[in-house]
Image (cartoon, rainbow, N blue to C red; front, side, top):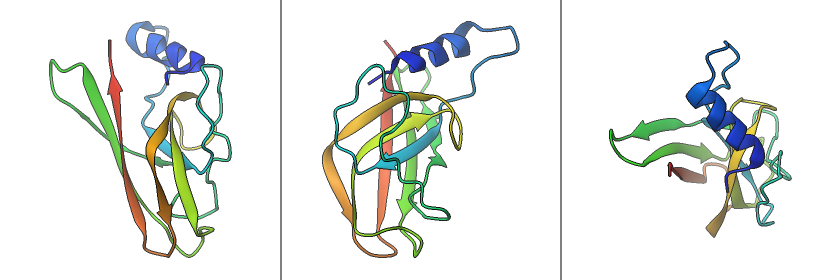
Length: 131
């Protein structure tokens, strides 16, 4: 869901020449929270933020094919000894900073993933449609 604040990020990225253009929203964050996203959300409820954990917010890889109306952000998260396991990943948030920042959108996953042990990983690909 594109959040209200995300609309401001998009508008800034496309049209702001004032020098205060919003940073690219290319950081992915995970949560076990399974509440349906709302347009007014500004944070990812219960975002996994364990210090030095392998499941904390991280910059994703951007990919886009010229002329296409979509682009993707992809990141593989791998649980490590600092993470609180097991954890079931239910939602992904897209931010424009490694901490704080603006949550542009979030997605409730159609299928959750449970990470139970150190070394377990999940690859998240967030597809953004421009229309």
